[in-house]
Image (cartoon, rainbow, N blue to C red):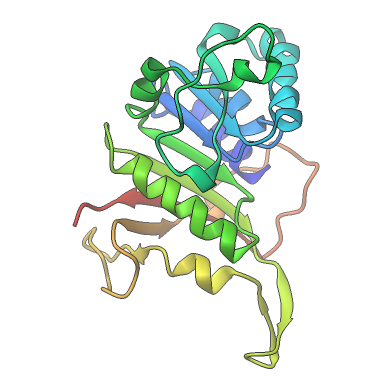
Length: 228
């Protein structure tokens, strides 16, 4: 819900996110995408599995009138991180309900022109984190220059390697990007190539949605692709 608050705040206070092509990755219920649909030119809401995508599509249809957006500009599509980017081109088959979530070649081309990406609560397994960042790097290296806003909550477990309670998967997550220095460049050469990140100050993001607690373990990162 933190990322939804951020999108709402941007739409209330600036035109930065207006009229842009946007993709939500690992959408779940699609809440972030629905908030952005109010101002976006096109929004791709993506996840994996028919039951999740069916729920996303239902949420689009249920909320379009209340949030005042055109359903036609919202595409719910399957994006399997195991297959990275681009996704396979499919065909719409009336006998196969799942085909409505397949991509056309023109949609892939349009998605690559997205300038804004969102991902919330996608960091919880090292294996999935690997696949997520592989897909993200492939997508961000193509087409228009993109910015990814990502939120996560640190989850703590006891580590046998470190003999301490540590945030599970957080160190692995941080290995995928360099932190931006004061001059706008990378501050180290140890991260995997291609991404540079800047942590967002949550004190500057008002809490419009009251149904969650903002604990100290919530973080938001702004990630950009930095060509080698």
